[in-house]
Image (cartoon, rainbow, N blue to C red; front, side, top):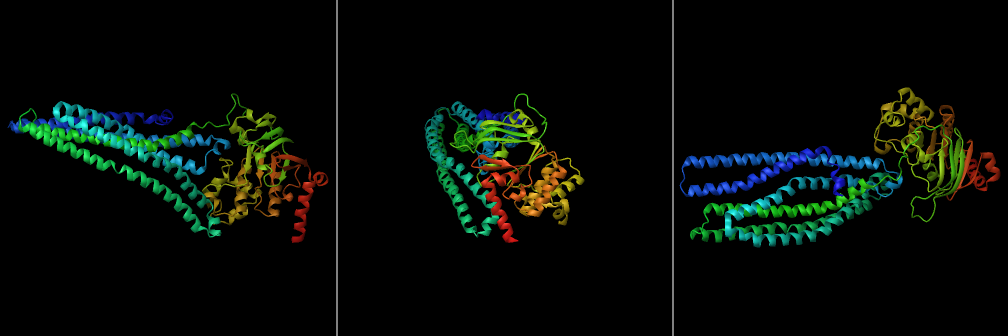
Amino acid sequence: MIKTLLASVREYKKPALLSFSAIVGEVIIECLIPFITASLITKIQNNVEMGELIKIGLLLVLMAFVSLGCGALAGHASAKASAGFAKNLRTDMFDRIQRFSFENIDRFSSASLVTRMTTDVGNAQMSFMMIIRVAVRAPLMFVFAVVMASIMGGKLALTFVVVIPVLLAGLIIVTRKAMPAFHRVFKKYDKLNESVEENVRAMRVVKGFAREDYEKQKFGKAAEDIRADFTKAERIVAFNNPLMQACLYFNMVFVLFIGSKLVITASGVEVGHLSAMLTYGFQVLMSLMMLSMIYVILTISLESMRRITEVLKEEPTLKNPEKPITQLANGSIDFEDVSFKYSKTADNFALSGVNLHIASGMTVGLIGGTGSSKSTLVQLIPRLYDVTEGVIRVGGNDVRDYDIESLRDAVAMVLQKNQLFSGKIKDNLRWGNENATDEELVEACKLAQAHEFITAFPDGYDTYIEQGGTNVSGGQKQRLCIARALLKKPKILILDDSTSAVDTRTDALIRMGFKRYIPDTTKIIIAQRIASVEDADLIVIMDNGRVVSQGTHEELLKSSPIYREIYEEQTTGRDENE
């Protein structure tokens, strides 16, 4: 795990090493200052000449400034290194997610991925900065201070024999008691983010059903769970401070009481030694305190690091072959005994024994009830998933032999859930072809029956689309997505129920545009309305993950009871409305 995370440090190794070097210098100087100060006090006690005292004083001032410079340099370098580490970590996670297949993404919820890239990376950043700064400083300070105290204090150093074990034992007990609560918090963060995400996405539904109070209660419960665990953990960690103070005061009393006796009895201990011992005692105890806080923070962050590593180590289930094919000869599609299930451990297949031949340039309609796996079928064509059994050939080659990017670039999909991105309409359209001219944008939008409503906006094609396309209707969103797909001029165009929000006349005009604009493109249209596919070259009827019938409109009316029943229901309803 550590090796995986440290791979994201990369170009920020130098600032991290610089921080380490500066901290070593700072600690050495801080441990020498009490020694020099003790010498100064002893010389004052022995009435040494003022000139020598001034020299020692100036040396202390210089050491203080050097220590300050080392501290500032360490702070700047550690901040730069930790911020850069977090940037690289987020970039690496995002790059990895972009390479995930749908199967990989199904393992993580979107709320969990957001938490991992924000809260968890923030914790990892804080831990990294603590490691390269405080985690280096604290043990060095502890060792140097104990050594210097032993050299200067003699018997007075025995105070550490009592204080250090007591403080260590207390800190270990405190951190072990607090850790379970900190572990629980991170899982609850996912629930909190999920509540926010669902509420924002479904805002219209929430308001439409007047369920604001329910959503507030749900969010409040998630927030309260986090507060309760954090409060419990922080209440336990709060014992660190009084424990530290008790040990500090014990050390002070011991040094002053025993040290004073030794000074009075002229046992080789001077007043300067007492001053140094008090300072070293404070440094030792503060080092232990810092180590305990590092232990708490690292333990908290350990769960975050594990969750980040889980994403970074997730291997994409779809990979390019060693020598991929980069060009599609045409848009022909062949399903040969294709079966598919979403998970290897699933009991049932989503698709079973599908055999289908689609010639290049054909228009194919897919009809079937909800849950008949129509969308699943078309998602196998651009290799969003790999087949479990059988073979899918596009342009005469197995889809697994193609370069994934090349294959998907030749296939345009307008999904059931249309997605527009925040930005201008023209910027959204150019997702289909980033080099498309304004004339090409207009032509595609006219064919998709989108030009008219676009020009009705005050800013036309420069109209800003809000996040998720919330400022356009469902039908407008569908037509913009269709225009975006047309700009790609693909070899295969898949429309997954993507004209459900437009009227039948507009639907018919869009299909007429396909014939004129992309006559050589293979078109697969998933629809609930027979009117949307009745003029297709081939209509495929699906039920329970199987192809039950296929043929033209006229052939299916004669041979397929399911198709005939759907047709009669829809035409009867149409006649009654008329």
